[in-house]
Length: 243
Image (cartoon, rainbow, N blue to C red; front, top):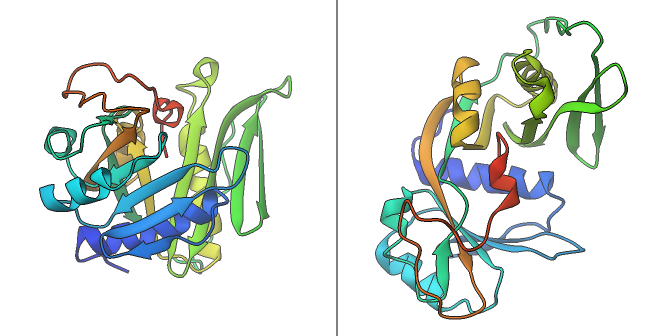
């Protein structure tokens, strides 16, 4: 499967991302989708399949509820002047990335775990999880993937600081993409932080589009300019793959 436009890739990504996060089915709109995750937070995200000044201004000006997030697949410096008062850029800029997945008919190689580590994978409610634990039982690395049709969305990939540079991130990625291919997926998508980009490119993933996030604050606080600190930190943006 090959995406001919960014909009097509975003449409595929948002459905897998919603499934991975336990959200309701994405609610379509002329500009994209609204995704609402379940309790306890009931977080709301507007995901734009295409973004321009008029569309961003319309969506953000019409949203006054604090805490709503906007995901636009453009550079942060382009998004910043488009958002309405009360919104600010959130977290660090990222990327939408994609990669072809190997055929399920190709035998998967056994994982090469460093000594003392243990890999576990399981699938629940349509989401496949992978965890690597250290010898003392603590979690060293994790990730998950959700398959919708021919697309697998890889999500929440993270290696804990004390266990980095041991190949655990690559091991998690291989376990997830092998599982996705076995379920019929032929292409993978993920939203990556700048930190995670190198890991994914080293395993064959390529940038499809930039990704910028914005957050609706409690009042008309104005915009954050690129390079300045955000008033609200997006905790998911601090890992290797983020929301």
